[in-house]
Image (spheres, rainbow, N blue to C red):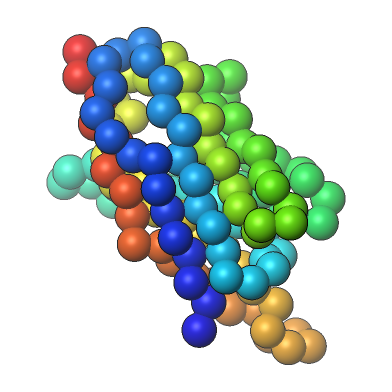
Length: 118
């Protein structure tokens, strides 16, 4: 069973910064972040393809959020700058793991709360 361990959430004022991290217990094919605000559905934030480093960001976070990784530790970071109250929510790490030929399984972390006050 693959484990994704998140850390780094917290409370910050608008305009501030927070860095989240997600450590996978194994190598991954892709890893990213989703978030869920109270009363809303979970939404995509950003993703990176591990082998190529290709990244994609939701339009709402482009230019403010940045993914980086530490390959040796299978760890992904999400640097969140210029935070806005609408960025508030539980942030979930998500990863695709190639477990066998043509077998890709998706995993979720436990979530970490980010609260941005105005």
